[in-house]
Length: 444
Image 1 (cartoon, rainbow, N blue to C red):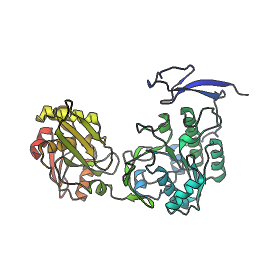
Image 2: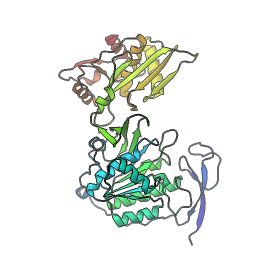
Image 3: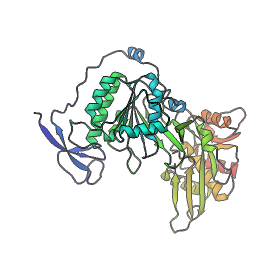
């Protein structure tokens, strides 16, 4: 009989200790170290040795991508799903993760059988959702199981074209005595599932639960193990959902796919820019910003509201934008152009529920704040982008030509851009600026 050992594992970061501690030395969280009993042999699975081949021969062994059935999701993933690719999708409860994966499973059925492992719902519940979505389900095999060894056995027996695990926090291995969802269980189950899918060339979608802060539950190593991480964003009671590619080993990150929740499930929105600026009113504080972190730019509306503060300490609130970045922009506005906001509440919102983190939005946010403060609307056919430095300089950003071409495609005729980009687009008036003061003088 193998020797059994006891270790204490932090449920927040995965730190391990041979003794219990009130506070985790790694992440600093209190009372997160939980006792776990494991087998002493350490090796929980066996694996056949891998081949050693030149990189050119490995390229010859790769095949084309497989479509998910959603055109915009295929584009966000870099052209579709690759054999053996493990994709982690996370989002708030009830936002539509299971609905999306059921629809992908149905459309994936043309490639062969799909094994849908449901750890949170019974087979009857999954079937009822499938009926509501109008799915035939001939090729989708629902397997309500949480024991990992049984799941592995079915994958080896069926050799499906796709595996869906909903969710990874409900699956446990009998090799570990800790409960399902613990750090060690999530880490071990994900590692062994990834190993099996890559060995057999089976694509796999994994649903990940999220914490109350919105981050993916479990150890951070979970995101390192998988090939792709998708973040499902949007309000539960809103019609629209945004799937953002946070990590992708087979394509670029920052790509987004937009869906609309309807009676028959999720419907893809083929023109995200039209969705994000479709309800825009040309009012003070509204600016159109060409956003891109991936290969395809999207036009989004940035809104700012500046009003007299009701309390001694003015509020700084953001939705979809970094509040710390907002504080820097306000400081630069006061220093460089004399815009005093210490007695005002400042609110910034990215319309449509998208989170914008790239510094190229700085100039657009600054112009939106000035527009709201002065109660002067910005021209309707103008787009703005550029990074702001602390000394008021407007710095160059990437993908400038792609941003302008997307703006022109939707009828925008003017653009304020960083001076160092030095580009021209036929049919558009380009206003290069090198400082924040130049941009303010140009508009106001």
